[in-house]
Image (cartoon, protein in one colour):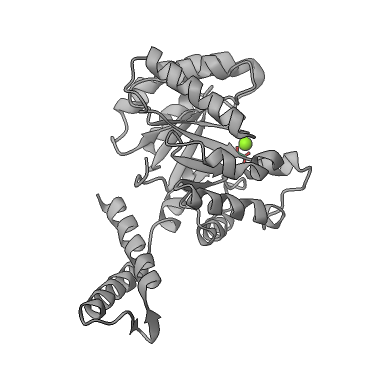
Length: 294
Ligand code: GLV
Ligand code: MG
């Protein structure tokens, strides 16, 4: 899924047919029918059956570009296998799974996905996996987990579970998980994975949401989960390059390529140095813009 647009990923509780229908109207880059923490224990099986039944219509009623990525219950739960079996259907580009804590666990998950993919007669290696690293152990073993190979497409940081596991109060600023969050974005990059950020819990506080997106973007996250459709437009905007950024990137690319042709290794734009890394950053902005436009 490298090169795919995953700015906004909308969670929808898997036990709510109404919310699953409503999610179709949000302009999220991905829909995440959830079987994990938004579903109470005694509704797990009902939710699984509902999501399984609704996946074809979710697929048929969303543009092809929108990813459908169900979240299954974590590996050591009694629901994991049956969840996986229920959601591995045509049109599912990935599954996401919480609380992954070791490379051994990740490998078992990869094995289970490969098996169920085969049983469902889906093309081999077509369903990617997005693990959530959201416990102290998950953060510590992030490098080993993220190095588990080409089944992984992205990695998510989960602030709710992380603060719960650490027995911390979750604050508005998120300073208590700043190091863990930043670490995930660095490990993701080192493993060629897209880093995805935890949802903003105060979904009616849109200024807070904007600020939270900006902090995540500065750290290197490429997108963010959401728990409310009303948060999607802001997330899309915050994780898209602004007009000003695109204009500047174009100027930089043009100036650097002209300098290179003239046999120079650097130049300047608007009084600031432009060399190879600045050029590469500008190219990345234009690539992201291209992905959004096409
Ligand atoms: C999401 O799953 C979180 O724990 O924040
Ligand atoms: Mg979580």
